[in-house]
Image (cartoon, rainbow, N blue to C red):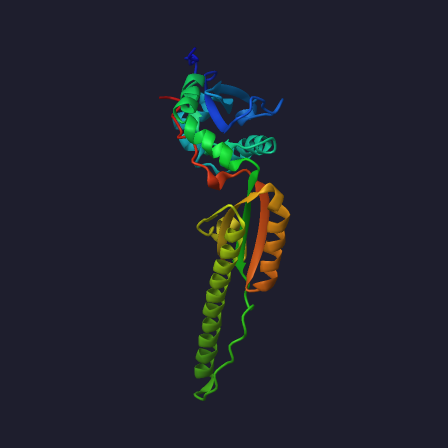
Length: 266
């Protein structure tokens, strides 16, 4: 039975998709988007975990406007991730992309039917595994110091020589960090089931004082998590030119093809 859309935009709702799982149970009392409780939509042996999204905030115009609001976006991302994270602790989950919204339950169920083989295969591939993240940042001064070249010419020439030496040292440090990051990624990827190297984040987003040279994601079997963390620590000790940050375990955001978003107002 298709869900009717309330003509009153203040009370009408769409369906926000958090993720797809193989089981039938959803975390009891877990709040979804906009604080509405999560619930299950089942079809073709799969379960979509969803929550109701008021069109007054998640309709076409409102959503477009809100996605430009960083504070709103952070709240929505946290609410969405909290559900996905809870699901991942109980078993494999295919996380949905942020702001994947459907008009009603029937359209969600149709996705489960049409993409059953793909989603079921992804769930089987992710079972017993999780994503780990490793970020690497340039460490200034970690490479041998370049000696200041000797020469005459007075104070101005000496300044130019020092400046050239500093720039050379900085470039050398950047190259060393980039090479170190490549070596770290290769070693971690060889340990993991699968790996992705994302584009480095801008400093304004990462909040780090130096440039990011590695933004890696690694899919790791549960029984190898301790070994992966130990390898990351070993690599950090072996590559002082790169400061490594290890995070996880995370839901496997980097290793799924998310269901396509469908406009709630369509």
